[in-house]
Image 1 (tube, rainbow, N blue to C red):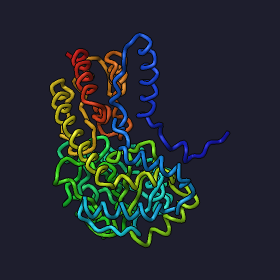
Image 2 (image 1 turned 180 degrees about the vertical axis):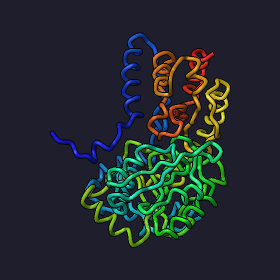
Image 3 (image 1 turned 135 degrees about the vertical axis):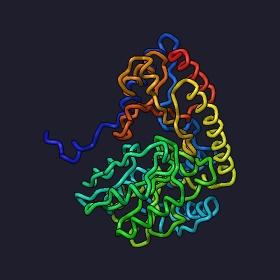
Length: 394
């Protein structure tokens, strides 16, 4: 059977390959009463809060399970708009908001609407792998630009200007970023957007971890810049609804009918039950719980990052958001005789029974020297993981 060239250009998602290996080993360990600690997947250990679960049950009982508009329930679009106003002090009309089947669908729709064959999109290296694959799937080319700890692993306007070429369509930024948990300074974001706009390009910003910012200087949405920003967001991370597959994008008004037309054909609509459930995310009790969870993620970060540093798994930039540690594993590789983070991840998994993610998914610039660990697990699990890593590395 002939496979399309497009499909062949999509690399494996090594995060999930590692997850499969870890799950298989965990099943074997369970037979002897041992456990695997999973710090490899970016999934909050918190589930949807009670009001959200109750809203889903109520939607099923009441028969609210039919198709919705392709752009999402009008009430949900308005709730999201209100949240931007109260949480980020930015006015985003509900007419610019399109509810999608997760942030993945939002990125796919944006890329299909804006990218032609041969278009180049500038992105930081390291960055979340699926973002560049959405560009590839739209027959574009993701151009990865090396970044360093000194710049918080975020692009600068100077790099964007230097890399801009005849085929450049725009930039795809992420703030806070996966895998680093670091955000872009708002003024640098402004300068990049101004440069991109002056070149007739597009600025897409992945903001799915914005709700989990821990530092006020980074807690501003790119949507505050102007109405030409395209922002991607999700109910998965801050709102704890990973498997519900619900997200949204904010687009300039003229682009919304284009997105809607694509969504009608590709997805019909997002999950109706998930949408009705998500309405309850914005109730006062739910928002209070989300803020408690955000504080807990910060508490975990404040314990875990110094503990990793003490083990020689140096995190060169303290993450200001999300729930990740991007750790330099050079010393650990030397100690265990591993040539790079891919091999080290298997050593840690097999010998310490801690699942981590090697850097190879996230780009090419020095990513073999890094592993990503998720602090989305519970504090007892994080403490035990540090104990296991300490026994392995000291």
